[in-house]
Image 1 (cartoon, rainbow, N blue to C red):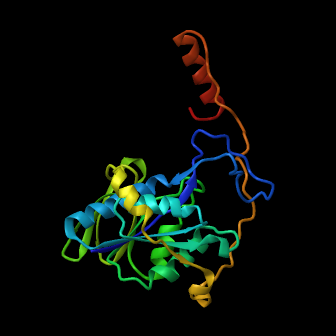
Image 2: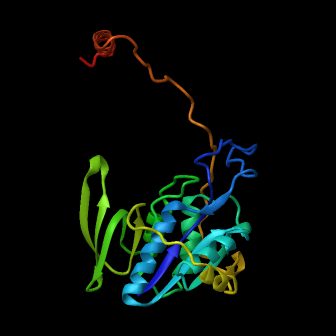
Length: 257
């Protein structure tokens, strides 16, 4: 079972104040810490679980700047066999579609049974790379996968839908799966594994090493902005009778009752 895992090194924004930078197309990152994208950690763990079950290899691929190699070494320590960094510095601003095209030019040269990605990147929330990559490679895919079993050249998966619904599908391999957080429990890397990973070579692929004719980088980010604040939540105070009366009046004013 040969598996490719796409990963991304992202800024940790959950507990930080995020500001749009002077270009209007990105966020200020100088004071932010970076780590492996959350759902990519689950994608990697799922690949390692299948490798332990059926054998094979795991190749981790990332479009990133040189400091991404620190993240790739941690991925190697957690179970990946080889790692490839596609030099983000060789390209102008990247969006989900451009990233998928660049990943495709490298991944299509490898032999793979499955490709795993996280369902989304926490820094931009595009949800686009996985589905675009599958379409460009011409293979089936499933998104928001919360369970997966492999057998007889196919994958039986469950995926989350709106409203708490689950969809059951069977997909022929090779295929791409964008996994949801919670599909497993990502492991920690041991100190010995980290030391071994520090000595492993990470392949660096630049613009001159890929088929530039296969790239159609004709999309661009127009603007990044914080959603404007409109109406805030209204909190009613008083006794239960007074609050229920105010709520009924508001719903009546809005034509909801």
